[in-house]
Length: 310
Image 1 (cartoon, rainbow, N blue to C red):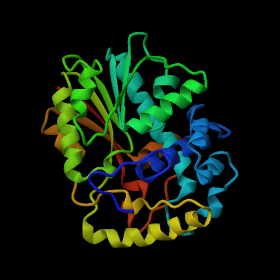
Image 2: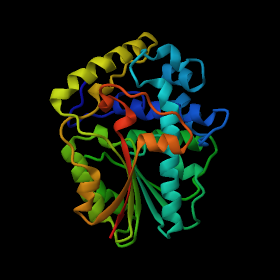
Image 3: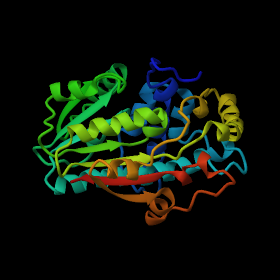
């Protein structure tokens, strides 16, 4: 079902299911012979959500090679490596920010992110997680049931990013006069282009000099170029549907011309350093994602930015 301005979801449906899918990929990456990341919460959280396809994939009962469409260039086979490299990028982002003295971390659309529980934070670090109330409640209750406690002062902010989240964040104790570190991981593609700009404007307004934001920038997808991508994705999702998983990414993301993150933030006082997905994979010892005629439909077009204010 296509997105609407006021749609909602849980972790088994719509955009929420993509967070569970990413957690499943992190679980696979964690269980690799030579893991790049260690997320012991990923597989238990996926199991708790209860999407059978994703549980079986995370546990190794489903082989990615049996699901992927040959010649597509992007599928389940590439996801564990891509998510491992992405996860490590943002883990290091927070580690570097903490080393620089920043003591406020904000995870936008936190989903099943367990960084508050698994990273080694400074003793005086406060971590804010922002997501829909049902998502926040599910993760908090599930991890508490595992007997785990956060390694930082965790403040959950249960609100949709389409609402007045800056006020809710400040009400939770966020101090805009102090430097902060933000991440927008796997988020921008699920926002309309104008909402991406509004989010970056709000982050800028709330950020003191020395603040940082780590983001995953997705390319523009003009409406006229979307049909080909939909056709390719429909073949992949048809295979998923055969195994009981009905999710169509092309119905979940927003298309149109997006502002370049580097340029947009640069005009607002930020300095950015970008790393394309291909470079990130190579730096972590992973093979490249196969190139296709339309790399807009793969992770090849994604760029990771670390931006610093002032």
